[in-house]
Length: 161
Length: 136
Image 1: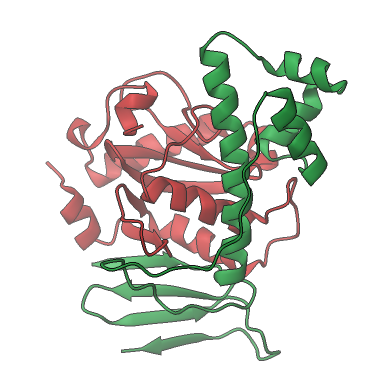
Image 2: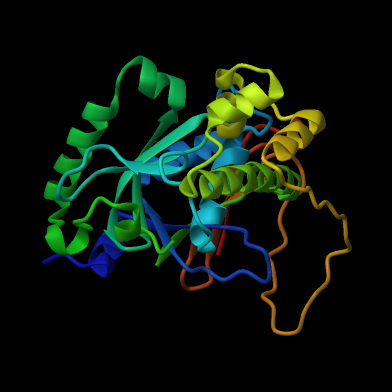
């Protein structure tokens, strides 16, 4: 049985943190695969072409989403997170106006981000199925079994709301 | 343990989180009113005389929210807006924030558990080529 510690030791996943308000504490955990962290680094570099729908840049949107998640604030179901398909060991999506992040919950309040992409690319090319299959394959390769996958698909199963 | 610190700089962080907080508050109130059986987006749109799709895009963050549209939405939801600027105040026992770049999307820091840190300059303020710095 693989543990979170073993995944971290093997560099299969790494903790992701953001600057938090001095009066906030980390109440949830966020991990990313090396590929996701590389994508996140590119996003922060602002090297991507300027594409945004709202006032905030994509990097600002992701920082706000991560801060909301990590500091334990409520996330709005469907607007900010949802499961791709209602199934056992579901794949979940974290959302901002311009960005989509795919991964799964190791435990309640503990998310592993595997893929990040622009929302319009995900929707235009209908990438949901591909990401879902790729994440399920990655979990198999990492030896992640049901003990490291939240089974439920209701919002309260994955987040303390 | 390896840790990735996603740092976009103080200025961008303040802007992004303020925008997110405003929108989040609108969504929260709307969800609460919806749960009590009232005020769907269509009703908001009719009350304001605009298309439902505009309300949806404003709430989802896909369209800009001007101060007027924010005031209009609050009025249509029957809510008051509270806005205040105040000096940041340190309180006893609070965390000590790290010092970060205030220029655009600043440093991205990879921090190792042993106190070792690797920094990648994301968008340098000066015209120097992009570089990776390592410090033990």
